[in-house]
Image 1 (cartoon, chains in turn green, cyan, yellow, blue):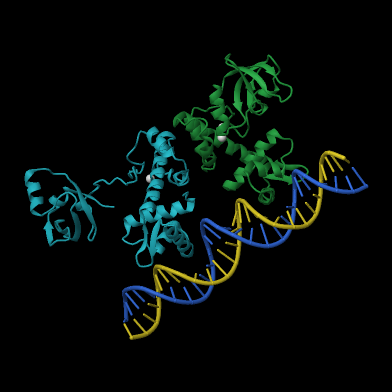
Image 2: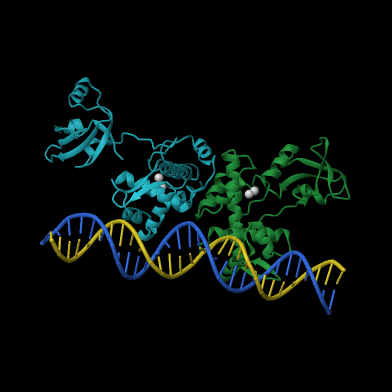
Length: 218
Length: 218
DNA sequence: CTCATGTATTAGGTTAGACTAATTTTGTAT
DNA sequence: ATACAAAATTAGTCTAACCTAATACATGAG
Ligand SMILES: [Mn+2]
Ligand SMILES: [Mn+2]
Ligand SMILES: [Mn+2]
Ligand SMILES: [Mn+2]
């Protein structure tokens, strides 16, 4: 059964929220899609009807197996297209998200596979996020920078916020995927951190920043 | 001003029909898009409102300059994506049209240019159709005069025989590059033609002559 | 000239997906 | 336990883009 652009966006939003919160509330979906709660509840009923989710106000929205399949397929296409835009068309990684938001909805049976092969079967998108394959999201060890203790370190594996302002900020800090970060100090009163990026001058960064950097620690 | 998917499809349809018919009728648009005439007239009024076309029942629909710009931009993207799908993703040329129908609506300021460069600035799509550039559809002398049927016409784009006798003969006929030729009649027994050159007196010309004149038709 | 047919137009209706403005339910702080 | 605020829900409205069915207009064959 073919899904609409809008249905696909809802399923994707529900998937992403479920990875960060233990309950996917109506409000969280509304905030994420910047839609009115009244619009959201209509769509949730439609998705429930189509057996793509379950929903009630206490449990929140939960993807069914087929709902998750759709969500992962969209995320896969989104991330593959982002790789294409950066690797082949030489876009900056900060520019590709809005274009991938459109491209992820292109529907064709063979397209994702052919694109994947053309790109050399990449494992990660330009933001360091893993590309789903075979209906599953690959998992790998990662930790928020905000969770590190003083003197611990790690390599930047991905960023949770892919907004242009945030990515521009990172660029200004000289921080990219693979940068090594060491925690020099942590301020108790607002959780801001003093860090060294690739061994350079200490920089102070807010908890909002450290919450959005995911590290490969091991 | 951003155009909807549907508006773009209408403008494209009007463009294509106008190249094959001397009037873009409501019915022709309805047939081409497989939409109901009642739906079509609504959209024509909307496009007229937005100054993308003019329309009245006797003249039919005519693209304004800005309407044509939009149409050519969509056709450009359609054909570039077809090249991508065939050249890079190794689709068969017969499979790519429905996918390009979706991809042509992806909106981003830089995308067409970047894609064009990535593909090596192709002049033709996989079906041999020219790819618009700089807001214009390239035209090529693509048909021998001898291939035209009665009542068809075209403009002289080039000549295959460049011998002095031939060119002198053309001069005597008052025929040069850009001259408009209309086929008035064709004689079965020796394939000679009776033609009007720039609307002048009918002239009879041999098949040897008509084989050596290349026309821009469309 | 007239009427049959094809083309254009109007009128009214549907669906998807959004909205605003109540209202109800739930959770939390006192 | 109360009362307030946040979250969920309902009711009603809107727009884009389609539809069907009825009607008007144009045209060409007899
Ligand atoms: Mn993205
Ligand atoms: Mn990404
Ligand atoms: Mn095509
Ligand atoms: Mn083509």
